[in-house]
Image (cartoon, rainbow, N blue to C red; front, side, top):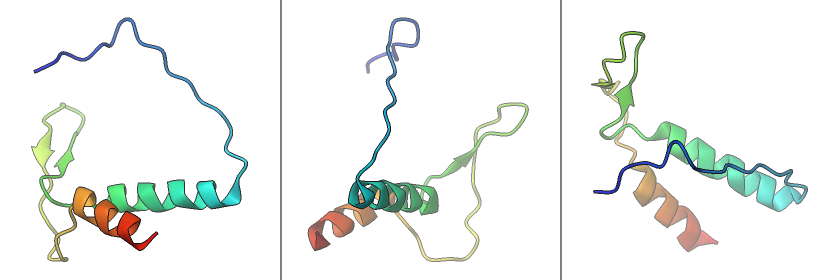
Length: 72
């Protein structure tokens, strides 16, 4: 187990001009946000509880991303 480096890390942001890459990033984020397997909700008291599935099909983002890139 590796601890997170929260004190000595550098985060960088840059603009993405290529329309194709912009769309790919949107697709990836959409897949990640649909993930509902072992998903957690962090509320105000920081309980970090599992999100209760809403009866929709299970979406595992790692599996869905694998399928997404297989099609490319």
